[in-house]
Amino acid sequence: MKIKEIEQFIKDNIKSSEYYVIVSRSQGFNVRFSDNKIISNGVGDSYDLSITTIIDKKVGSSSTSDISKEGILECIKNSYNQASFSLVSEDYYPLVSDEYLDEKEIESPNFEFILSDIEKKLFNIFSKDPSLRVFGYITGSFLDITLFNSEKLYKRSFLQEFNYSMNIKDMDIKRSVWQGSVSSFYKKDELERLYNILLNDFKNTKIIKSQKEGRYNVILSPSALSDMLLYLLYFMSFQDACEGKSPFSSLKREKIFPDYITLYTDPNLKEMKSIPFLLFNQSSVNHKFDLGLSLKKEYLIKDGVLKSLISNRFFDDKMKNTENIYPPSNLILKGSSLTFEEFIKDIDDALYINNLWYIREVDPITGLLTGLTRDGVYTVKNGKIINSINNFRFNQSPIKVLENILKLSASYLTLPREFGGESALNVVAPYVYVKDFNLSSVSKAI
Figure: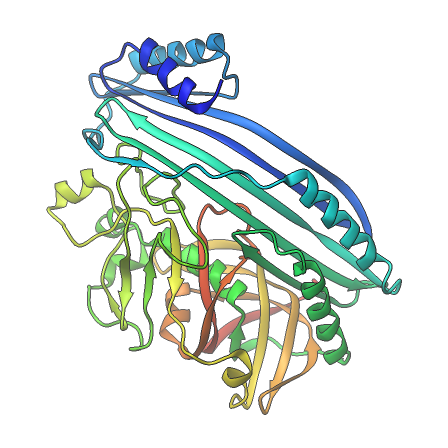
């Protein structure tokens, strides 16, 4: 059955007076490689169906990948039964109504051809330098997704994305460098580009020196910064702030950050299209009754001023607040006009951190995070990266990172190292020069 047929079949058979349905078709490929060998690859094409039934403010949900008539009927039945035996939802809110969006249908890429092309390029890269060990993954996806409900809401959208991640190590695994990227279309020369950047990183950082723990001025790459920004978004729940559970509980909607800090969301971002209505959710805000709300350009921080937190309609009504936004579909930190070369040339003394890993929450009240640097920490002297150093454990709040930014480059669509591939949000971020970054202990990781 096609999505339109699935939709009509559900409408003909569902008996509940209040419900919403998400039906999607996901096509794509993935290839993973380790130590100069492809270890897994394949092309996939699958359907997913989720039905949520609401009976007297009691909610039940059921999901399936079986889109036969029998499978759909079973999903409807399970959703209804679960709602029947559930407790009344204390945060119930009427479903979004009378909104319509039906984007022009587009064809999915030829993933079989793309996968074959990638394999050829990888074999060529593996053969270039036998003294280097190449690791990584490439994924491509095409999503056709429809959301409809009992209140005359209908939204259909398409999303296409490619992620590239490559890591090079020397034979004795004493040095390791990483690069990654994301795009809305297949870039046939992207693997070669990433590989050449990594070779250059190896060439320029042959000298390995030890560095003690401490507080340093650092440069965070867009990837490293994007992971911090995604955690910041998690802390920005309006309800958590009102209940004293977040770092924003003690912060007023006033100027907190430097004038040049502007953090916003825009579903019409030209670099990468995102779903223009509320569907995915990277925040900690419950949004199950708000699915389908139209998204637009909104500011979380503007010119250093905290403008909005993340909320839902129920809690906003309860608190009589109109200044919040709904969970966003992407995240953008506005940069400057400086290229990376222009950005770094006046920085006399800093450490460059390529990416972060194993990021975990330490204290939700202060927003303190801990984690490790990975695959590239370098010394910067007189505007140049001069050598590689050891890795560190860090203890730092993303709020403090934004407060302590001294300089920004232009912004780039980036692949978060920790959350890349897991997050439904794309991030656009600059290189940033940050003072007083707490590298709390030396790590033996590479």
